[in-house]
Length: 271
Image 1: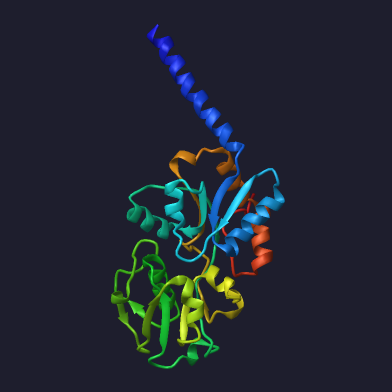
Image 2: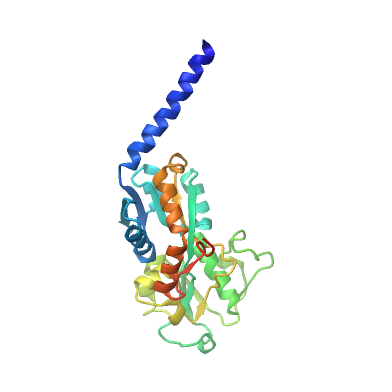
């Protein structure tokens, strides 16, 4: 009898989960995303598959999409890379789930004053992102272009987060300013160089593949942008369907054609 009761109990749990997912499937999937390229890519997903009911919530400066997700205000977000997510999980005291890995937006070095990095004189002012992961990423980019070197031990960008204090040599005596990422394109009028995230460069009308004086390599890049959800929603059929679409060959082709090397798909190559 106890065994039967346990069976009925388990059946009830499964039914409850099924009804929950069925109810959710009837609702729009709320996804917070940066306007470019993330919201555009989600718009293309909606165009290619009208059966997927998406409510895309475009982010503006100062809104933390991971806080929205933890609070239940959205069901997923699409704007960040894994190193940033890990830092956010520590800050928020929570664990989130990567549902899909989609594309890389190469970080770039931009200037309104110079056409080549070789022209940059000593004591030039360079603006870098002020958040932990993107500051480190920017420093590795400067090192790869020969502008600085980092201390011994800083070899893996995904593992060894660098700060300005970890610069070993700065032969051109670059003066570093740390600025909030969304403000970096505006800083180009006031500084000699700026290291700008791909999405903010695109929003400012820059084309990274064309306009950057130095561009981050996409090969073995740990900063692929991801679709993120909560543990409670990781098996939601809507999340799974969106993840499949974002990692599809069709979306990879859309990214290649639309952004011409400024956004690079990392999924959908073989599907």
